[in-house]
Amino acid sequence: MGFRVKHLKGAIATVLLSGVWAIAETLPSLAGGFTQPKNFNFTSLSYSNFDTDTFHKQEIQFYLEHGLQDNLTFIFKSPFAWSKNDDRGGDENSGFAPQEAGIRWRFNRDPYWATALQANIIVPLGYDADDDPSGAGNQDVGVEVSLPISRGFQVGKQRFGYGTVEVGYRDYFGSSSDELRLTGELSVDILRRFALATQFYGIYRLRESDNEDFSKIGGQMRWGANDNLTLSVGGFKNLTEFGGSFEAQIWYTFGAGKKAESETPAPPTEPKSP
Image 1 (tube, rainbow, N blue to C red):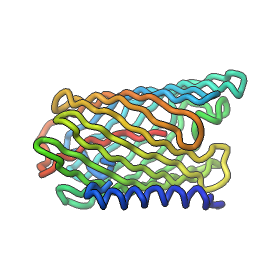
Image 2: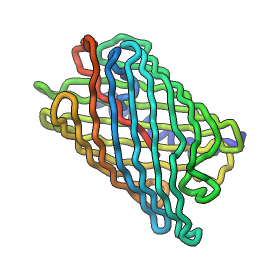
Image 3: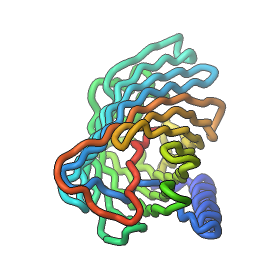
């Protein structure tokens, strides 16, 4: 397996520097370590577009987290995408992008810190990579194992925040390159029910591939309409080459039973996508 050392060093340095900054500010850096309380659900419906000079993509994604136990959450992600590639004569493509399903197990009980182990299976459906390799993604079945570490904190009366760093390894059962995936997020309530968030997301191929390494940085404004409904708008800037994206999300939580108690409320988990 040919390891792309230059890109990996840069990715690790970015994460380490972010971590040092976070510790110095006592805001340890993504909500991925938290789990949903038993019988509670977090759902998200999102729209995003991505544009470069020659490539255009739109995506609608449904995302679900269901609390099997207070420390065990089922995860499902279903994206549907449309793309067009001017470099290939205006070829267009649409269909269900690879679907993901998995489990997140939180193995600590600290009210502020959440450390978890997550395993996902990735199953391709109708989005043919041969029609548009630059946008369709890999078309091999794969598995991903990741380690998210998160922390919630209070920043004022009825105002909270959270931060996360996450490292994942994705292995495809085919010719597609294995991947190292790095994610970081920091979200802070500026006002009660209004938060600002920023994220970093990177995919690094571990051997030669038609798909290049990919990284982006972005942010969102999030408004909690009530205890169950949150609206979010924002965008991302592609760091790898020219390009950017806009996104809008609707989050909704619901469930039955007793909600897990915590000094700092566990934040919702935002679905991640390249």
